[in-house]
Amino acid sequence: MMMTKMNLTKHVEDLNIESGGTYRGTCPVCRGSNTFTVFNDSGRFIYNCYKLSCRIKGAVNIGLTAKDIQMQMRKRGKQDVVREEIPTMEIPQYVVQPTPEMKDFHGFLNKWKVPAYGLMYDVKDSRCVFPIYKKGRIIDAIGRSLKGNKPKWYRYTGQAPAYFAGTGKTLLIVEDVLSAIIAAQEIQDVTSMAILGTSLNAKHMEYIGEYSRVLVALDPDALNKTIQYRREIALWTGLPTIAICLEDDPKYRRTNDIETIKNKCLHSK
Image 1 (tube, rainbow, N blue to C red):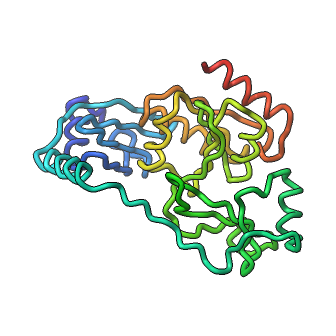
Image 2: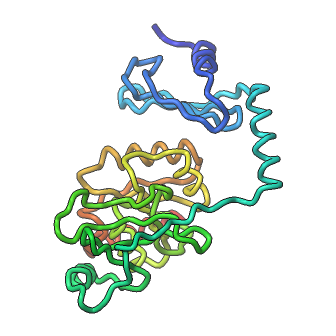
Image 3: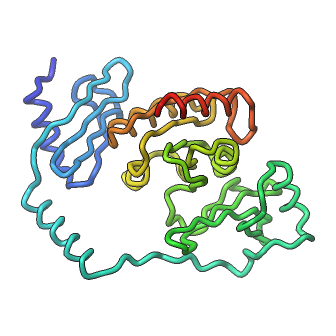
């Protein structure tokens, strides 16, 4: 049975999502399993179904509950009197500054043409370690296995939601840290972002919202996820967001792919 706008509004309201919270579950229209998302943006509920045959989306203004308003006031009060505490990563003793004798470390960097500056080496698990900074402090790091150890990419604290490289106003979302670094090397107009996980969350959106436009260029085998990310980002942030289908990951420096990204940066301005 066709759900009316009024019924859909009531359905969203009955989910009781607190301000800043999200929901994912069964679509009330097409009954698609886990395809319906709702984000409470301070009383403006943004909803969307990702099932291709449904594509219902929109927003309803329900307003903040008394509880939401109280929570926001408490948060603002705390922000006024308490400075943000940045969780600094305690670097393990086995994560060290690289030396010329560490052949696997330097061989890895030479293969990908990535500079060693700022990187570290995990002598216990043979990993190239990429530190992640916030306001000058290392809050996390991600290590790439050099000898086939599992997992291939290892998170040291889990405090950082993403890895960034570059300083451009256009955000390029890529599959992994190497692709982020190499894309930033090849394309001056972007900041590359490697999402350290399998899905986007509110923290990612907070970072993404700081940029003027977004390009999504994941692994070619993950085209469905590329399209899904584009839709989620556009819906949550309202930013111009483009999905790009590349021949390969940016880390392979394929000329066609680099030129495609450059053209998208130029034409999206």
